[in-house]
Structure formats: structure tokens, C-alpha cells
Image: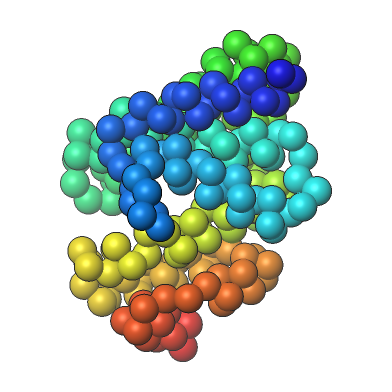
Amino acid sequence: MNKLEKAFALFDQYNQQDPHTVSWEGKDYPAEYFYALQLYNWVKKLKPTASETLLLASRSQHIGRWKVPRETYPLGKPGYYKWRTDLAKFHAETAGELMSEAGYPEDEINAVKRIIRKEQLRTDEEVQVMEDALCLVFLEFQYEDFLAKHDEEKMIRILKKSWTKMNQAGREAALTLMFNEKGTELLQRALA
């Protein structure tokens, strides 16, 4: 097993501990394990020549997310942003520890951490590919669940924000996805 395979195995073992599950096509998966695989798949679709660094970041972007629940932070935007910042640091550190265990040197670990923390978004191509892939995972696998939990105006704001985060390649990929009638209607309204 080479370093990359070992790191993936360590990431996957870690994420398979997620007590939350996702059902997809009749099968249940630990949630963060499932989303990590989908993020990795989207990164490979968007950038078939993705670097090892980007592939490692995609497989560990939200590693252990269930360990830092949103409800442990104050309500409102400041609490939300603090949670997101702390999560990014937690994901980066956790991925770094597992990469070290897999035999990666510090410079490669730091490159992955930078992508996980989304440093230089908009100016770094790899960080932008990751952002596009994250938005696509949301749209493909989480959007319709959100529809059931949030009012239309909030969903339209979320969709507009997601659209703004993506570059042209991400937007084109998003337009290939299929949604239920309500999901399609809200996306059309958000983009109007």
C-alpha cells in the first residue's frame, strides 16, 4: 500500500465512525464517509488531472465533522462563522495527523491543510475546484433534504450564495443535476 492509499484508508476509517447515516440508493453509509467519497468523485470529474494534494484534501475536507456539532456554538451569524472557522482548523489538523501517520512530509501536509482551510479561494485553482465540488455535493445529495427543513426564501439565499461561490465549470456541472419539481423551481428563481 502506497502513502496515498494508506492516507485514504486512514481517512475512511476515521469517517466511518460517524454515528449519523445517509441512505443512498437503498444502502446506508456513515454520513461523512459518504460525503467524502462524493467530494472526491466530484473533484475527479471537475479536474481529471487533480494533484495528489487536491485528492487528499477532497477525501478529508470534512473529516470528523460530527465531533464539532453546530449546536455547541451560539445561534446567529457570528456563532455560525466561529463554528465554520473552528471546524476548518479541526479538519486540517485531523487530516494532517493522519497524513503524517501515512508517511507524508510536513510540506505536503501543509499544502493539504491550506486547501482544507480554503486559503486563497478565487485565486488558487485547487481551492476553487474544492469549493465547486463542495457546492455540487450539497446540490446533488443534500439540497432536497434542506428543502423540507427551510422556507423558500432561505433556500433561495442558500442557492444564490452557492452559485456565487462556484466558477463557470462548477455552474455548468450544477446545471446537469436533476432535482424534484420544487428544487428545480427554487433554483430557477434563485438564478433569475
